[in-house]
Image: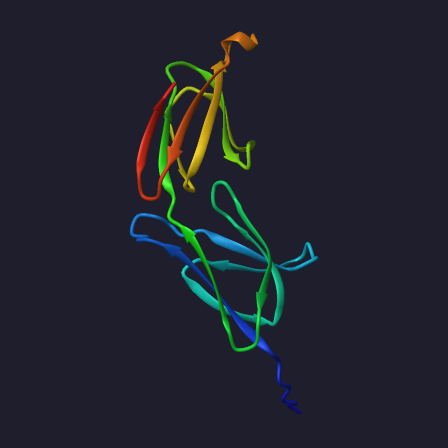
Length: 162
């Protein structure tokens, strides 16, 4: 027996602002608000129907973007837009310990650890103001610690030499 039941649904549309020709779009973890259980992992540049209600989104970019209490209403589309990332290449002059932070609301949030970095590494980062804090791997003294500030813009490439 089939029983038809009307279920109110809304659509969640995830889009990247800009062209994605050389960039693999991120994914988004969708959870019902108040739950730790993963409901679905949705690709960007796609739409999907969910039951109406509130959802928490964790967008798997660097740094991660978290949106809480996104409301989906019956027969309506909720669009979430994320800017295209920029590219940074961090080029050390010797073996170094390096940490990457983003400036948010007058504080620093750790984004990435480069452990024992001796070769250039490239990351795709969301637009924003960043700080690299670094020191030589052999030097354990705090007076050897330095920092470099830089800014990331969508679809721009930047090289930071340490």
